Length: 187
Length: 220
Image (cartoon, rainbow over all chains, first blue to last red; front, side):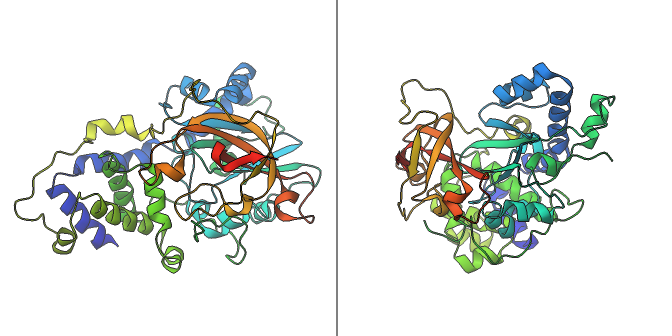
């Protein structure tokens, strides 16, 4: 593949169809600038600021843009709150839809056939493979991202973090917890 | 189309295999392929729905064999030829055809920050487009078998659910993918009980929420 991609890129550059410096900038953006740390900041703020959380659940793009590191125009986002009664989990069964601005690019497993096929029919089994056991009385809600809406999960704040700072809380929040296949645990 | 990409509810693919500390790109060519896709998208010769349909048209056995970015590469080569940006002869020789015009790329490095954080998918509140359904209404996903692009998964067809959220107005993928117009209409999050989708052995409280367009739904 490396040779085929290189050959295509050379041809496209030679024809003036793409700018190689723009390609470098794109690779750098997704490798270094956009990723789940952005989402973790949003979660930590929601855990520590009830008014912010209220705005986030009502108008996710606006509340995420408030934190200043994202331009959220054009793409609509919905934040799904996990509670003691509801566990949310996100999938795209048809392709690989994922909230790039807050989580970066999706991991391979999220785009893989096992996850896409089973997340909707056996979410509890999939969660078990991630080490998460959801009690029978808790409702599991799976969100199949079939349109241009992007979902992120607001995980439950772990007990024992009452005194933690927002920065310390952000460090606890994992990518998988914002997809809904993990719980946030004390390190 | 009833393609291999429409995997929701299938068995046999085995356990989910998560990689610890996974890099964003496993090899440099993956990053270049991702970047090429964005840079070529700036020509606006195709839209997101056309692009998705391009991947769906990869034959099933190939679709399952190929890695994710291999599928992107294959799709982009097809779209480049189909839209005339590149000819088959150029792909084979690796060089521009003699006398072909030198173009100017629409996306320069300075423009990357703006587009990288904005996927540019327009949705909006458009009072002129009336929603056909209201929140709380019972609806059935139509039992239809489009041969073109669609975002109505097979596992939902014929099933009954409830309008949970109205997301506003979006282009309709089934026409937008094929150059037949945006046909903008409301998209809803529709809640289906797990038992409605999968039968009585599914947990009673669990549910699947699917984003569906007006034209996929009928009153139940």
